[in-house]
Image (cartoon, rainbow, N blue to C red; front, side, top):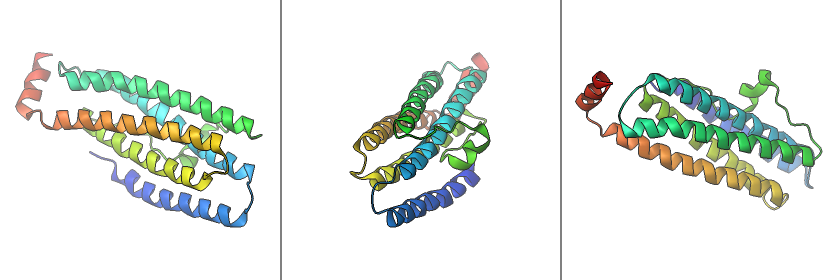
Length: 196
């Protein structure tokens, strides 16, 4: 079952993120490195949560033994996503340091600062659906950050644009897996599970 509370909460957090960026833009006519550092720490928290979620889904998916190729491919992709998200974490932390800031890895505030959710669902299809929703929300928030940054800091903007590009590739792969699992007849899934 999909975590709709997370989706509802993300709508309000998305609105808060936009409001925050508008207020920063209005109160700081010139470039303010602390505003970028704060935004990047939000991106850092988001990516750290993505790493943890993808690793949890990778290890949990071993509990779904199935000869179905789409489930196996999704299983392998979780670790690939976790590794890519870890690279994003390192790149964002490095950029924060370059801007003279402190990369905040405090676990106590990750959930408050990040724009992703840590979920661990039951079925492979539910897990893929939640990952797709979470990924699209992250893309939306990061695109807001990119628009906010504009031409003020091209290095940070380019970094976030590359992350968004990879997130969109992930979303395309997830959608393909979801479609393949949805068209699999329930009787075939039951037969495959009984055979394994």
